[in-house]
Image (cartoon, rainbow, N blue to C red; front, side, top):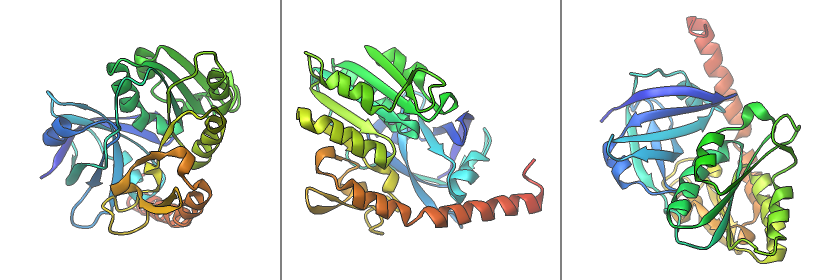
Amino acid sequence: MSHKILSIKQLSQDVFTAEIEAKLIAQARKPGQFVIISINNDYSERIPLTIAGADAEKGTIRLIWQRVGKTTAELADLKAGDEISGIVGPLGNPTHLENFGTVVCVGGGIGNAPLLPIATGLKEAGNKVISILGARNKELVILEDEFSKISDELIVTTDDGSYGRKALVTEPLKEICEREEKPDKIFVIGPAIMMKFCCKTTEPYKISTEVSLNTIMVDGTGMCGGCRVEVGGKAKFVCVDGPEFDGHQVNFDLMMKRLGAYRDLEQQAHEAYLKHKCKLGLDQ
């Protein structure tokens, strides 16, 4: 069954969003879950992408992705009206949502995409939501408007100070942890190094901190073993055991080593795709 793309646009450098027809998935999905897409069933790679939102009545899901390898580049080159051959989901364990009290949602770069439905669900559950969004510069900040609508307090940081506060996300996070009214729960999604140091920041305050490790997923079904991580000294598979885990129990150093194992292959595949486009005259 094919799935039509209703709209697609670029959010920032190498980051894109699309609204895609997927009625059953839109009706069943919950915050924190993901899908596996195949652009063309005959030859394309299958990649997992977190569901960034859904409209059950309209029968559509929203996907946001970063162009890093061949398949994500192919996806970014599609247009409204094009079709994706296969979408499987929703997969993964949904986020546990309840009224914790005061929650902090920390997003880094593309991590804002999977964080948005979680923050929205937490707000709907009655929580006071404090959102911290970080990026390297102003151009890479995404979904700020959407977060502002569901956040009781919103803090934007950039590494270079070109927008918001010049700081890493750990700086305002530490300040919030030191408030008289400490947060009851913290959710962090972003680059592995950012999640690692956010967890180091919250650990001394003994505040429960959930992280989503979706960036390490490859196959998305538990068969390839590419998303194996160590949590609390035990091996876990992100796609079937997660994607969310207690951040204070995750071995981030081991995870980052595993992430690096695929980086060169992704780059090589992307470069080969660009050369193929150029040869066909499709790079205009």
